[in-house]
Image (cartoon, rainbow, N blue to C red; front, side, top):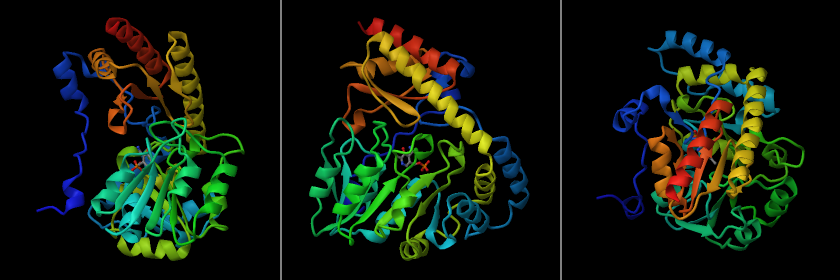
Amino acid sequence: LAVPGVRALSPYQPGKPIEELARELGLNPSEIIKLASNENPLGPSDKAMAAARKALDEMCLYPDGNGFNLKQALCRRYGIEMDQITLGNGSNDVLEVITRCFADADSEVIYSQYAFAVYPLVAQAIGARGISVPARDWGHDLDAMADAVTDRTRLIFVANPNNPTGTVHKSDAIEAFMKRIPEEVLVVLDEAYCEYLTGDEYPDGLDLLERYPNLIVCRTFSKAWGLAALRVGYAISSPAIADILNRVRQPFNVDTVALAAATAVLDDEDYLKRSRDVNEAGLRQLEEGLDRMGLLYIPSAGNFVTVEVGEDAAGIYRSLLNRGVIVRPVAGYGMPQHLRVSVGLASENERFLEALSEAMITAG
Ligand code: PMP
């Protein structure tokens, strides 16, 4: 009975709970490390935790459907206005609402090969035609993406940095791309990992908003801010676009606990700094370890690295799992020889490197 776009979707494969996996593998749950979902290895910010606990007192009331306090905190931090913000149940929710508002079954939606899996999914779900543009050096080929625009194109997704490749474009490249996109085509700049970028050469999508009213910047609290379980993401756009998005999103799409934790963590500068520092050191540690093993990896600007392990990537994945290390296969992205590993704490990165080295030897 489902409409054709939905019928063609492949089901999301959620991971098993750690306890269940441990039972299957005959391991103790504490022996298992999960480096599969680009989560923050620090654990939650104390400030976010205190605010979340306090917010539970209001469990029997509906959340603030406008997210007033969180929007105020975002405005203070980023110098934007309340009417530019659309809150979502994670940025996945925002990506879906954007697609539903601005594309339909007659539209084309452009994204890059190897780009974040939710883009084809949300496009397909509404019956739009997804245009996957071949990547260049694993990253977005922005020129080819601009060339792919037709009079049916409504939306273009650009992940900067991209997941699962970790590739990133600098400001001048993004600006040159925006200049080529007609005003009536919306560009979604997905900056889920932007907090990990250091250096002035990378774009802050917010700087581009004034010059390009067809731009929507999406961000999340799931990564550097460490709130993946609470599901908070947001879009920043022109007030006109935000007005449309806010008409369509569910009015209570972010719950009270999530709103309180996200508002509090935005003031936790120390937590953000530690997130960045741990990530930078962890990336270096992983890269050095992979270099020692002679393995190729895609240099990453995110909180993960995608490593080329060869034809038996599925076997290596399984072998890592048997050693209690969960990583992410990326065959579904058309990268059957790679595995993606999230940056963990130093001890976790070390365990991953050891397990990988053993798994590679076993695989021969
Ligand atoms: N965009 C990108 C590029 C991502 O990698 C992710 C998370 N894996 C998201 C968006 C969605 O994050 P969330 O829904 O947790 O905000």
